[in-house]
Image: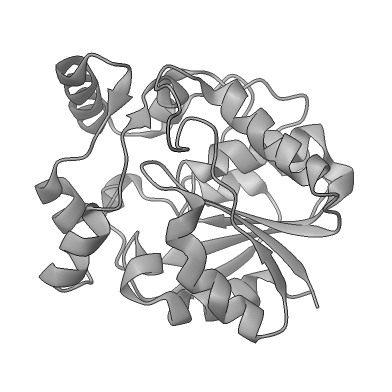
Length: 241
């Protein structure tokens, strides 16, 4: 039995990963799905990346979790990189699921094409409370293009405003991901268009891990909604010893 901690992406909470966690538990594993600070019900939307990272560090420590296979989805890659930099002794492997891989001093927006950054900035300015929300059309076409309309709509209704500062804060690391002395996997969804394929997740971001296991599966950026069983199977492949 292994211990998996699944760290969600932007606009999500840990609850959205419950169907995936159920499949992993059926396979005999312990699974935890915390919610990052800034995405919990009632959280202010002005918190930053450091608070996000510390919330997952605290979760692992408070729950006495060790030998953890730590997965981060999308923005969650920023978070798990910070966690691995701070408490590597509690971890067994990192899994980046179509996730950002930052080096020291990089922000998420530094890894996103300028036109996408401009969209985020405009959306944040429009809301005026420190948060950003995806328009449904962007969600439907770029994030969950493998789902039918009913599934995409139901998933969209679960999303919550995300703190924009976590996208613009630059991460502070003692060790860049390539030098972190942990096994790493990159889980790639082949129909993912959340980033344009001219500036895609792999190999542009995955190669920053240096030595890593590549696992590919069909599906969109939001495979957790469209096919949680398929995602769970890929996670097990990515997490095996």
